[in-house]
Amino acid sequence: MNQSISVSLTPSELSPECDLHQACSVIIDVLRATSVMATAGQSGVGRMTTCENVHAAAQLADQTPIRPLLCGERHCKPIDGFDLGNSPAEYTPERVADRDLVLTTTNGTRAIHAAMRSRRLLAASFLNLNATVAAVRSEPHLQIVCAGTNGQISFEDVLLAGAIIDRLDPPALQDSAPSGHLDDSARIAWSAWRQADVNTRPLGQSLAQSLGGRNLIEAGYEADLQRCAQVSTIDGTIERVDPGEAVFEFRRRG
Amino acid sequence: MNQSISVSLTPSELSPECDLHQACSVIIDVLRATSVMATAGQSGVGRMTTCENVHAAAQLADQTPIRPLLCGERHCKPIDGFDLGNSPAEYTPERVADRDLVLTTTNGTRAIHAAMRSRRLLAASFLNLNATVAAVRSEPHLQIVCAGTNGQISFEDVLLAGAIIDRLDPPALQDSAPSGHLDDSARIAWSAWRQADVNTRPLGQSLAQSLGGRNLIEAGYEADLQRCAQVSTIDGTIERVDPGEAVFEFRRRG
View 1 (cartoon, one colour):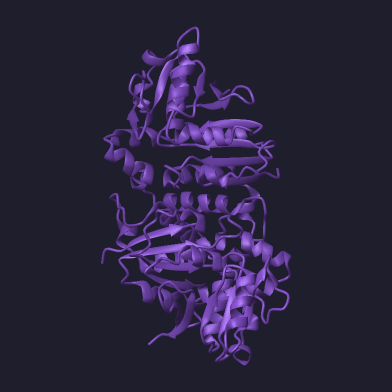
View 2 (view 1 turned 135 degrees about the vertical axis):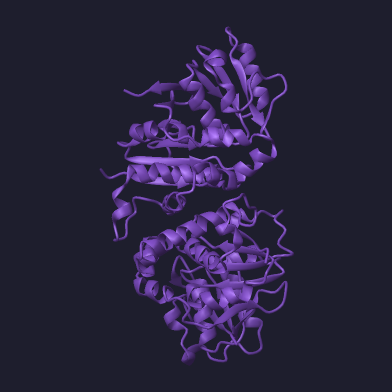
């Protein structure tokens, strides 16, 4: 299969001219928005709607007949008046099963909205790596979007982009001839993953060294690093329900 | 020595807020501006002045008492009315020895100007890798700026950034503990280099797969890939002469 894979190391690399309309986009915010979404999915959440800012999230929650849970963070911290923060540990079945939620985070939801015009849209974390890879294996044009941290490239998101590419194992990786099927950022992300892998360093350690990881440790959420460093413990995808709407659901595999 | 190393994978990652005034910046445009500068240096060129646009370059040449050589490219091609293009093959001692030159290129000279406010400024290529590394080894804050290709990340520049970091061998690379001495892009660039290295693929092949390499091949300059893929064949640095001026000279080592 001739699969083309592009990676944006930050959402701003997705220029407005970038033609996403044919693409399946995979949004990555390992620490922690997309890890939270996978965890909530596993815990039986209903629909998850992402909003770019706090005000829009609160307004949406107020206008919804059955009030959803208001969730998210700013600068790693819970938001005043919200029900849940952005730690996967909070998203237990007791808290979220059968509840809809509205989520706004500093980087993750912005990346989602930057890629909104994609034909298909998924949110990926290490937690649901294998399920995500299986779901996008047949996509002819895959666009991976790393959320980064405050506009900067963040190592942990690039690592997961590389892990997805590695598991897809596109022919361009074996090719010694020139090949346009992986763009340069995709090649770079794959190298980052392989090199981290070759070091056989626990994934949690690599996350701790990243910009997002250092910020989390500083904010007192070190335990979340290990929670977000579990690989493929959740067997389902987080997928947008309808084009044009930032509403996601968990789809269990099989 | 506690050396901090930051990498900008494109010049636009250098935000206007980035404090370069204390930094030594190393500009990389492997294909081909900084390879041309090293080659010209080896061939005995005088001073090299970089200009951001064609008009400014032509004007500067006209205003200089002893007319310098006008050099550069747009979209890989020589510029009408200029003396030399952007292929290292043109920069022979016969053409450039003891001549000053004015250079304007699509990506390389723009990257130089983006980092102009740096305390110290060098232009690096694979050709003078070891000499560049020796010259920056004692710099406490090193900023490496990849020129990229038309605003996009280009693999060949990231590879050289990684090679420089690998040869500097900063303690942060061995550290398994969190360390702020390499930023995330520096870690990513180092991974790209190590992974290319581990593959034991000739460097020219890696360059051919990059965005810059594919563009060059398409424009008919495939032979330049091999010219720019020679490692440390030139034993000197390309260094800015005075702060605030985009004037460079070749400094032979030793």
